[in-house]
Amino acid sequence: MSADDPTPPGARIDWSLAASVGRRVARPGPLTTTYTLDAARAELAASAAAAEAPVRAVTGLADGLPVPAAKVLERGEWIGAAAQSMSAMLGGGDPTVKPGIAGRISGVQAGGLLAFMSGAILGQYDPFTTDPDTGSDGVLMLVTPNIIAVERSLKVVPSDFRLWVCLHEVTHRVQFSANPWLRGYMLDNIAQLSEDTGESSAELVNRISSALRSGKPREKGVMGAMQLLQTPEQYDAFSRLMMLGTLLEGHADHVMDAVGPEQVPTVQTIRAAFDARRTRPQNPVQRIIRSLIGMDAKLAQYIRGKAFTDEVVATVGMTRFNAIWSGPDTMPRPEEIDEPRRWIDRVL
Image (tube, one colour):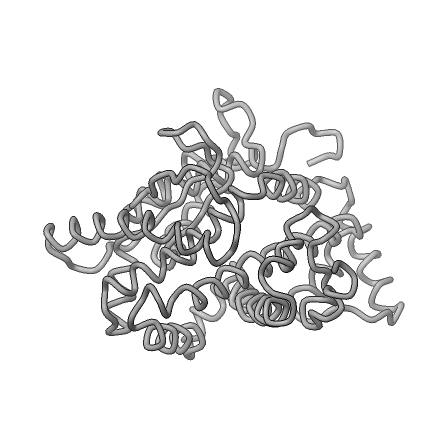
């Protein structure tokens, strides 16, 4: 693809085919009766609404804004919604233009990835999709069969677990509802990250070789790999997205634990069981897949982001912590996530 090609990255993927393939190959959910499934759906919808008030009270965000209903979905429905969101997020182009063979091949690959993820996602706030019922940006989705499967696996009280999950996802909705600039900030950085630089394979190899020979210090793990593979501008965008994701996930986990004791009677049991599940050993194939799609990096985001939020809130309180949502300049920097005092000194 040349640097002069105006086709946005998302248009190179046949997202309609991705959704179709994903729905066909996704594994079915756990065996349940129709009564159990309907009851779980109704309780999840009610829990999402019930979670809004305590989350707003703890965070001090989104006071007075409307509370849209959550979308309670099956795995196939989530796949369709995720494909639509990815197309919008990556600039899917003119829907009347049929993708070429490369786009269809990418669509099949994306469909397989969506099928795998459809069995792992409990809930998700999607800021890039317009809610068809309200016309507003952002949709909160809860995947019923996955929540049922995990609550059975953990042997926890279903009603408590469902509310606990909703507390996390509703926090994301509150974050974006109270701070509309976050959506544009994410889109701008995604556009920068996915921009075709026109760099040839030879130029890429030369740049990586020069970086390796320079001996300059690099980040560890995924961040270090991206630092080598991406241009400086792309790496800066990637770093900003990683820091934003770390903040959003860590803040949501902090709120779950802050709200939980009053709202979820068995929260300590759930937290212990869920954390053990997150860190349990995986078979080699699962480890490879998790690494490739970034699930392990996401787990690190939860841990680092929660530690950052816990320390800042404990030091200055939630009201002053909320200065973090002022704009891009108050987002935590990579060197501040593990040393929250540096963020406090710089921003507050």
